[in-house]
Length: 244
Image (cartoon, rainbow, N blue to C red):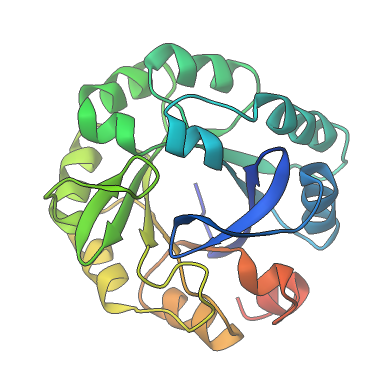
Protein backbone atom coordinates (compact mmCIF):
# COMPACT_ATOMS: atom_id res chain seq x y z
CA UNK A 1 0.00 0.00 0.00
CA UNK A 2 1.36 3.37 -1.08
CA UNK A 3 4.81 2.31 -2.29
CA UNK A 4 5.29 5.96 -3.21
CA UNK A 5 3.76 9.08 -1.68
CA UNK A 6 0.26 9.71 -3.04
CA UNK A 7 -2.24 12.55 -3.11
CA UNK A 8 -5.66 10.97 -2.59
CA UNK A 9 -8.84 12.90 -3.49
CA UNK A 10 -11.71 12.61 -1.03
CA UNK A 11 -15.23 11.76 -2.15
CA UNK A 12 -17.26 12.18 1.05
CA UNK A 13 -20.93 11.39 0.50
CA UNK A 14 -23.91 12.76 2.42
CA UNK A 15 -27.50 12.35 1.23
CA UNK A 16 -26.16 11.04 -2.07
CA UNK A 17 -24.03 14.11 -2.78
CA UNK A 18 -20.36 14.96 -2.38
CA UNK A 19 -20.04 17.07 0.78
CA UNK A 20 -17.10 18.56 2.66
CA UNK A 21 -17.61 19.26 6.37
CA UNK A 22 -15.88 21.96 8.43
CA UNK A 23 -14.23 20.67 11.59
CA UNK A 24 -16.15 17.43 11.22
CA UNK A 25 -19.38 19.05 12.39
CA UNK A 26 -22.66 17.91 10.94
CA UNK A 27 -24.59 20.68 9.23
CA UNK A 28 -21.48 22.61 8.17
CA UNK A 29 -21.11 20.86 4.82
CA UNK A 30 -20.90 22.37 1.38
CA UNK A 31 -22.16 20.21 -1.49
CA UNK A 32 -20.16 19.55 -4.65
CA UNK A 33 -22.46 17.46 -6.79
CA UNK A 34 -22.66 13.86 -7.90
CA UNK A 35 -20.14 11.36 -6.44
CA UNK A 36 -19.67 9.52 -9.74
CA UNK A 37 -18.87 12.78 -11.55
CA UNK A 38 -16.36 13.69 -8.84
CA UNK A 39 -14.71 10.27 -8.87
CA UNK A 40 -14.38 10.24 -12.65
CA UNK A 41 -12.98 13.76 -12.57
CA UNK A 42 -10.24 12.79 -10.12
CA UNK A 43 -9.35 9.61 -11.98
CA UNK A 44 -9.11 11.53 -15.26
CA UNK A 45 -6.74 13.94 -13.47
CA UNK A 46 -4.43 11.09 -12.47
CA UNK A 47 -5.61 9.81 -9.08
CA UNK A 48 -4.36 6.33 -8.24
CA UNK A 49 -6.48 5.99 -5.07
CA UNK A 50 -9.85 7.43 -4.09
CA UNK A 51 -10.97 8.01 -0.52
CA UNK A 52 -14.72 7.37 -0.16
CA UNK A 53 -16.61 8.10 3.05
CA UNK A 54 -20.27 7.55 3.83
CA UNK A 55 -20.74 10.54 6.13
CA UNK A 56 -24.27 9.58 7.10
CA UNK A 57 -22.98 6.12 7.97
CA UNK A 58 -20.26 7.60 10.15
CA UNK A 59 -22.79 9.59 12.15
CA UNK A 60 -25.60 7.05 12.27
CA UNK A 61 -23.55 3.88 12.71
CA UNK A 62 -24.80 2.09 9.61
CA UNK A 63 -24.18 2.60 5.92
CA UNK A 64 -26.66 5.04 4.42
CA UNK A 65 -25.19 5.84 0.98
CA UNK A 66 -24.55 2.32 -0.27
CA UNK A 67 -26.24 2.99 -3.60
CA UNK A 68 -24.15 6.08 -4.33
CA UNK A 69 -20.95 4.31 -3.27
CA UNK A 70 -21.79 1.29 -5.43
CA UNK A 71 -22.33 3.60 -8.41
CA UNK A 72 -18.86 5.06 -7.90
CA UNK A 73 -17.25 1.61 -7.70
CA UNK A 74 -19.10 0.49 -10.83
CA UNK A 75 -17.94 3.58 -12.71
CA UNK A 76 -14.34 2.99 -11.66
CA UNK A 77 -14.50 -0.60 -12.85
CA UNK A 78 -15.11 0.78 -16.34
CA UNK A 79 -11.98 2.96 -16.50
CA UNK A 80 -8.76 1.72 -18.06
CA UNK A 81 -6.38 2.86 -15.32
CA UNK A 82 -6.33 0.78 -12.11
CA UNK A 83 -7.65 2.81 -9.18
CA UNK A 84 -7.67 1.69 -5.56
CA UNK A 85 -10.73 2.51 -3.49
CA UNK A 86 -10.68 2.88 0.28
CA UNK A 87 -14.08 3.20 1.96
CA UNK A 88 -15.18 4.23 5.43
CA UNK A 89 -18.28 5.29 7.30
CA UNK A 90 -20.75 2.97 8.99
CA UNK A 91 -18.67 -0.21 8.64
CA UNK A 92 -19.19 -1.82 12.03
CA UNK A 93 -18.84 -5.61 11.67
CA UNK A 94 -16.56 -8.21 10.13
CA UNK A 95 -19.40 -9.16 7.80
CA UNK A 96 -19.82 -5.54 6.67
CA UNK A 97 -16.12 -5.28 5.89
CA UNK A 98 -15.63 -8.62 4.16
CA UNK A 99 -18.73 -8.14 2.00
CA UNK A 100 -17.32 -4.83 0.75
CA UNK A 101 -13.85 -6.28 0.20
CA UNK A 102 -15.25 -9.24 -1.70
CA UNK A 103 -17.27 -6.80 -3.83
CA UNK A 104 -14.14 -5.00 -4.99
CA UNK A 105 -13.32 -2.38 -2.37
CA UNK A 106 -9.55 -2.44 -1.87
CA UNK A 107 -9.44 -1.20 1.73
CA UNK A 108 -12.00 -0.64 4.45
CA UNK A 109 -11.56 2.21 6.90
CA UNK A 110 -12.51 1.32 10.47
CA UNK A 111 -12.87 3.98 13.13
CA UNK A 112 -15.61 3.48 15.69
CA UNK A 113 -15.66 -0.29 15.12
CA UNK A 114 -11.92 -0.61 15.72
CA UNK A 115 -12.11 1.41 18.94
CA UNK A 116 -15.10 -0.47 20.32
CA UNK A 117 -13.85 -3.90 19.23
CA UNK A 118 -10.12 -3.89 18.42
CA UNK A 119 -10.19 -7.61 17.59
CA UNK A 120 -12.15 -6.78 14.44
CA UNK A 121 -8.90 -5.58 12.86
CA UNK A 122 -7.21 -8.93 13.36
CA UNK A 123 -10.28 -10.89 12.27
CA UNK A 124 -10.59 -9.07 8.96
CA UNK A 125 -6.85 -9.03 8.34
CA UNK A 126 -6.65 -12.78 8.80
CA UNK A 127 -8.88 -13.48 5.79
CA UNK A 128 -8.16 -10.27 3.85
CA UNK A 129 -4.54 -9.24 4.49
CA UNK A 130 -3.49 -5.62 3.96
CA UNK A 131 -7.10 -4.49 3.70
CA UNK A 132 -7.76 -2.57 6.94
CA UNK A 133 -6.98 1.11 7.36
CA UNK A 134 -7.65 2.10 10.97
CA UNK A 135 -9.01 5.62 11.27
CA UNK A 136 -7.64 7.54 14.23
CA UNK A 137 -9.41 10.88 14.07
CA UNK A 138 -8.17 13.29 16.72
CA UNK A 139 -9.68 16.36 18.32
CA UNK A 140 -7.65 18.18 20.98
CA UNK A 141 -5.16 15.30 20.89
CA UNK A 142 -7.77 12.63 21.67
CA UNK A 143 -9.16 9.98 19.35
CA UNK A 144 -12.84 10.65 18.62
CA UNK A 145 -15.47 8.34 17.13
CA UNK A 146 -19.11 8.25 15.97
CA UNK A 147 -18.64 10.91 13.35
CA UNK A 148 -16.13 12.80 15.52
CA UNK A 149 -18.75 13.40 18.25
CA UNK A 150 -17.50 11.17 21.09
CA UNK A 151 -14.15 11.21 22.87
CA UNK A 152 -12.39 7.96 23.72
CA UNK A 153 -9.49 9.00 25.96
CA UNK A 154 -7.09 7.30 23.53
CA UNK A 155 -3.80 8.84 22.47
CA UNK A 156 -3.46 8.52 18.66
CA UNK A 157 0.17 7.38 18.64
CA UNK A 158 -0.32 4.79 21.37
CA UNK A 159 -3.45 3.44 19.70
CA UNK A 160 -1.70 3.28 16.33
CA UNK A 161 0.95 0.98 17.75
CA UNK A 162 -1.65 -1.43 19.09
CA UNK A 163 -3.50 -1.63 15.78
CA UNK A 164 -0.27 -2.16 13.87
CA UNK A 165 0.39 -5.20 16.09
CA UNK A 166 -3.10 -6.49 15.24
CA UNK A 167 -2.47 -6.48 11.50
CA UNK A 168 -3.70 -3.08 10.35
CA UNK A 169 -2.30 -2.27 6.91
CA UNK A 170 -2.11 1.42 7.72
CA UNK A 171 -3.40 4.28 9.83
CA UNK A 172 -5.57 7.12 8.59
CA UNK A 173 -5.01 10.15 10.79
CA UNK A 174 -7.48 13.01 10.50
CA UNK A 175 -6.70 16.20 12.39
CA UNK A 176 -10.30 17.15 13.12
CA UNK A 177 -9.34 20.50 14.62
CA UNK A 178 -8.28 21.76 11.18
CA UNK A 179 -10.43 19.54 8.96
CA UNK A 180 -12.22 21.38 6.14
CA UNK A 181 -11.10 24.83 7.28
CA UNK A 182 -8.49 25.46 4.55
CA UNK A 183 -6.22 27.08 7.14
CA UNK A 184 -3.23 24.76 6.80
CA UNK A 185 -1.96 21.56 8.38
CA UNK A 186 -0.24 20.63 11.61
CA UNK A 187 2.68 18.31 11.02
CA UNK A 188 3.69 17.45 14.59
CA UNK A 189 0.84 14.96 15.24
CA UNK A 190 1.53 13.26 11.91
CA UNK A 191 5.27 12.98 12.58
CA UNK A 192 4.52 11.51 16.02
CA UNK A 193 2.37 8.76 14.48
CA UNK A 194 4.95 8.04 11.79
CA UNK A 195 7.56 7.58 14.49
CA UNK A 196 5.27 5.26 16.48
CA UNK A 197 4.53 2.69 13.77
CA UNK A 198 6.15 0.88 10.85
CA UNK A 199 2.97 0.83 8.75
CA UNK A 200 1.88 3.64 6.40
CA UNK A 201 0.31 6.76 7.90
CA UNK A 202 -2.21 8.55 5.72
CA UNK A 203 -2.72 12.17 6.73
CA UNK A 204 -5.91 14.18 6.37
CA UNK A 205 -7.19 17.54 7.52
CA UNK A 206 -6.39 21.17 6.83
CA UNK A 207 -4.67 20.97 3.45
CA UNK A 208 -5.01 24.36 1.74
CA UNK A 209 -1.89 24.74 -0.38
CA UNK A 210 0.71 22.73 -2.22
CA UNK A 211 3.12 23.61 0.59
CA UNK A 212 0.77 21.76 2.97
CA UNK A 213 1.03 18.67 0.78
CA UNK A 214 4.81 18.91 0.82
CA UNK A 215 4.87 19.46 4.58
CA UNK A 216 2.89 16.28 5.26
CA UNK A 217 5.08 14.34 2.86
CA UNK A 218 8.19 15.64 4.63
CA UNK A 219 6.64 14.71 8.00
CA UNK A 220 6.69 11.10 6.85
CA UNK A 221 3.11 10.54 5.67
CA UNK A 222 2.76 7.87 3.00
CA UNK A 223 -0.22 9.66 1.48
CA UNK A 224 -2.39 12.70 2.04
CA UNK A 225 -6.15 12.88 1.58
CA UNK A 226 -7.30 16.17 0.06
CA UNK A 227 -10.91 17.33 -0.11
CA UNK A 228 -11.95 20.97 0.19
CA UNK A 229 -8.79 22.40 -1.36
CA UNK A 230 -9.42 20.45 -4.58
CA UNK A 231 -13.15 21.15 -4.70
CA UNK A 232 -12.58 24.86 -4.06
CA UNK A 233 -9.88 25.08 -6.71
CA UNK A 234 -7.04 26.09 -4.41
CA UNK A 235 -4.88 23.90 -6.63
CA UNK A 236 -5.45 21.14 -9.15
CA UNK A 237 -4.83 17.46 -8.60
CA UNK A 238 -2.27 17.58 -11.43
CA UNK A 239 -0.40 20.34 -9.59
CA UNK A 240 -0.49 18.32 -6.37
CA UNK A 241 0.75 15.20 -8.11
CA UNK A 242 3.54 17.29 -9.58
CA UNK A 243 4.89 17.98 -6.09
CA UNK A 244 5.65 14.33 -5.42
